[in-house]
Image 1: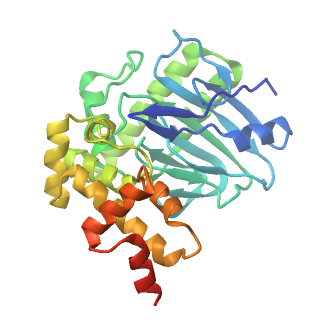
Image 2: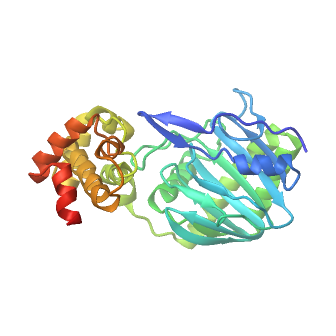
Image 3: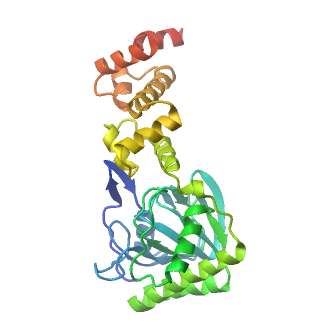
Length: 334
């Protein structure tokens, strides 16, 4: 097996850390010769390094081949672009946006940067998985896609492919003989380190997928690309990042929106300003912890819910509930 290298498995955006698919468990399994791994990558992705001038925008490409049951799986992660993963053999449990699925041989999986996903439940079984991850300049659904210059589909074909991938978010797709041939060609190009062949096979794969989508008359929903959806997804994600020092500016930046536009959509979706909604969610979380975790100190709860001090937390809590956190806890426990 060729030497596999690995770098920091994350990228930062608007103060948030997004965990890319560093494949650490896979890399360790490959090092122990429990699985065969062939990959080319950039940034936090595993594999032999892609030179800066070689296929810019291609973040990761490769395959693993597990001949027996494994003791690892890939945890929940996001990627720095759109990912196409094809299961050439075997069956694999996957979870996309908290929805458990089964990926079967000759099927392929499509995920986008805002879609957290996991491979294995918790472990993977025997199988050969081939993947391509391409950065098309997006992190949120409303953003326009910018394909790398080496993607040579005609403007009309590229527009049609982009439209399907933006306006339909079905995760798992049945493949066909042509899809299988292209993915196997990608795997061969990676194994032999043939950059020109890799570019040809990825382009052909995109064209084959487009023809398959056209034949299926895929239903499309423009609402999937709306700015309102981007803000809605962010507000959902906010529940797990309430401890961060959010400001209206960093929230807007995380959505790739201007402050005025972000405020407009936040108020439209919640009937609250962003600052008011953030405070509301922090107090809601604090309430649940005050009653559900009676052994924890009020200071610990305050910091975990994003308040800078217990005194500030007490002031905000009293303004919201007309009670101090201590009185609220005693009342609910009584």
